[in-house]
Amino acid sequence: MNIKEDISPSYQLRRYAWSAKLPLSIVTDFEELSVFNCQMKPSSTDKPGIGRIAYYTFDEYRDKFDAIYDVFSKEAILKGSFDRYAQPTKGKKGTAEVDREFLKEIECWRELLAKNIALRNPDVSIYELNYAVQKIIDRIIFLRICEDRGIEPYGQLQTNAEGKGVYTHLLNHFRLAESKYNSGIFDFECDGITPRLSIDDKVLKTIIQDLYYPKSPYEFSVLGVEILGNVYEQFLGKVIRLTAGHQAKVETKPEVKKAGGVYYTPQYIVEYIVKNTVGKLIAGKTPEEIAEIKVLDPACGSGNFLIGAYTYLLRYHLDWYVKNISFKKKALPKNYKEVVFQAKENEWYLTTAEKKRILVANIFGVDIDPQAVEVTKLSLQLKVLEHESRESIDQQVKLGLEGVLPNLGDNIMCGNSLIWPEYYEQQQGTLFDEAEMRRVNVFDWDDERKGFGKILKKGGFDCVIGNPPYVLIGKDIHSAPELSYLNHYKVAQYKTDLFHLFLQRGVDLLGYRGLLGFIVPNPWLTLKFTEKLRQYILKEGKIDEVVVFSHLVFRKADVYTALIFLKKEKAESNHLLSVKNVPSATDSDDILGTKAIYVLQSGLCLI
Image: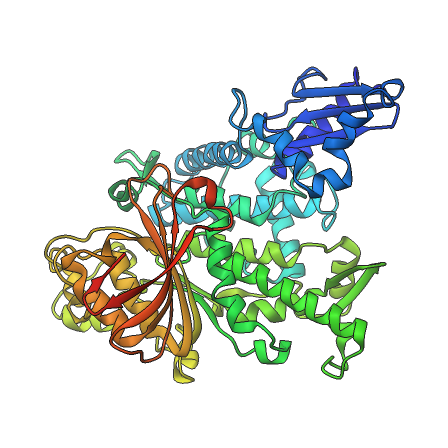
């Protein structure tokens, strides 16, 4: 192998690193050492030198040892030298983030599928078209990721795309996956839409054949669910419409237009909120105690906050088990071999059964968009499959276990978190057609089967986290039919924003001493017309911390934000709280800044 001249080593390295969002990577066989900037989208036609920023041969190592050691040694990497070396490559001309490129990819798939399905299936409705396109894309992505992770045989989808009758072959493949995973992704008992469609071979071949090496720049084994969530958050900002001639057209959703776009919450924000809510709740607790903790995102979108919470829980459980195994503590469950296993020395993993148990026991979400709900389920289920192999999955199937993946229908639900069924009673005499019912999409929190009545009867959720929508709903809260229902919100007044209502709903859903962590616009802390909201927060909870950002967290949105953390318990009329000021984007990764103590009084925030 010639690292300098051969295309294969550089392309495979750049493909892997780009998909994993690693800015710099190294390929070496000792004789040669090449360093690549991996932020440029790789192509199989690239020359081997594309992206290379350093190259050494073995006979240069002695003379250039200090330069190499100061950047690439373990000690240098731990001190941050490698990160500093990588910094100048950020934002250079030609760089392309994998999430942006993959978004373009699946948006292209959506348009191809939508137009072809509308053409070949003249009776398909708008709802059925949106459902079918999303479902087919989700299934293809899920199986393709499983292939690169070694859970499914590599190339199965590609084989299905050979010859004629591609969609028939795909449906058969999906049904086999249903029998194995039993997850809801391939639930054909509930899905009566996709099996009856006609789709041209050319469309499906275009989508599937471009997903494989060497054409595909994506290495799906390292394409994290967080990256996938970012992609889907943007993807869900558009919807398929049907013209009068039954032609499909993809348009931005009206609510997204009103909000000025879709804004994905940066990962450091998610991690900080999770650490200061979920982290505080579970600190020092055993897995048995944690099993009773319920975490909710009432506007979960593509699920990035729930993925963050689930990831934190998985890490905590693994650390707890390994620590207790090492010291053979009495707290260790007798069946610990069913919850954790050792792959090799100093390398432990949670079993699939334990990851499923944690997910079903602890993670809950609601969103008004049915497609967002499906994406959240998909992302969480892919998280369950991390570190799994085909052998471990096949073993579970042989043992006759009830599905490799959990069905999350009772955990992640579709509905309008702000409007309950009483809305229909208030609209007596009004006829609701199917489109109107889907638009309003009321959610019954108290229903034990279709809502979260069982949790609420036990006192409520232990933790509510998220980034609720920021949408001004009008000077008059009665300006739209369903908004007449919202007059019972105590925080609603002039210029009510949806996030005001989500703040009240979040507090109301918490059990006693439960924790809330939201990122919201910060003007509500001081404006006169948000006085009712501040009064409600101060009456119903005790604020632990406010983090104020002096820069734009969402760079394309002209809104300054703050994090609010509170506990559901009665507090004094005057609150002593910690306020962190984050003056610039450079301080954001660990949310540092000047700490101070301020007094938050009823109706007024002094910041």
